Image (cartoon, rainbow, N blue to C red; front, side, top):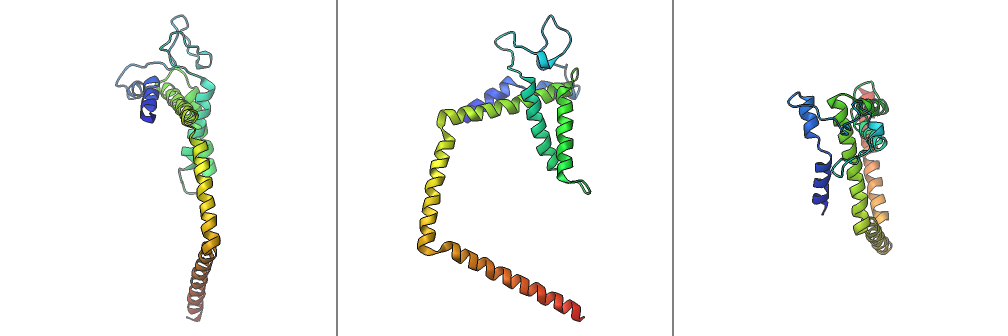
Length: 185
């Protein structure tokens, strides 16, 4: 069920033609498709004309790419730059690429953004069909209840706390002994 739905997302929003155009191995295929009447590209005003036209929404694609850019940029660890600067930079870069028109980079960014949006919509539809969140909540509540019963009966939490306290005491005593030995020399 999930694989079939994600395959539909890949077919609705293909990225291969845009990658080929970006690498100059093929002709540019504008995304979203241009109307026959309007030669100026404006993804903000796109409306599907035919049934097989993609369901493209520029605000959603832009928000998705900003989120992806902030996550990707925040996970790039550069010396002297905090993660939040990378997050802002990644979000700004992908937002710029998404709104840029007339290039295969912008087409690729918009297609990727709509792919992320469509995958999120499919996840919500799967949840609606199968009620996954409700089932996970029920099962996790039952597991939590069983864990609390076992803890009351066998005092597992107290023993775990005692074990970690013992490990911490041993480590801190060892560190203090090493520091004392270094100061003596």
